[in-house]
Length: 209
Image (tube, rainbow, N blue to C red; front, side, top):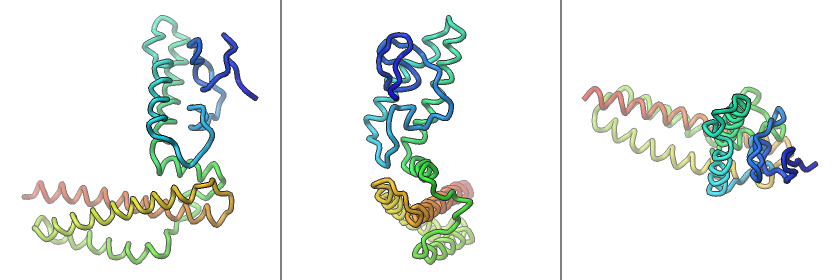
């Protein structure tokens, strides 16, 4: 059922505010990140359009515009927080995919801990490379190893994100596909942890020179 503004009767594009008359709304509980922006759940979100939508809604809901009305300011603060939380999910490929997996009934990272089988051998090699660089300290070879490994992991991450995005087109419903997507996302989580570890090693090496 199409929602309309209680103040002016205009059809609403967002549950947070009427973009016709500026009336702040009390959104229903349990809004999805997509609903906050007036969108249907989808694997792909146009980044430029999403940012423009964020700016447009932010201009309508910012608390500074409602300083003289405590009730309106409270709603503005709540709606702005909901808008920012939804943006954090929708603007990030992995966060968006993670939300969609839950929405579609797929397993979370606790229920499905595995990574793709083809990925596991590479994990062993990457772990060994990190440990060798850690043991070598701040010498030139260790720095070169970290630089090469970092580039390899970033390239692998890009490839995995592409596979996840493609696997969500169209939005899947079969269990096997949802499980495989979770395994790919587990692999991305591993890469992110390892990349963070490499960054810390770089800082440690730099400070010891």
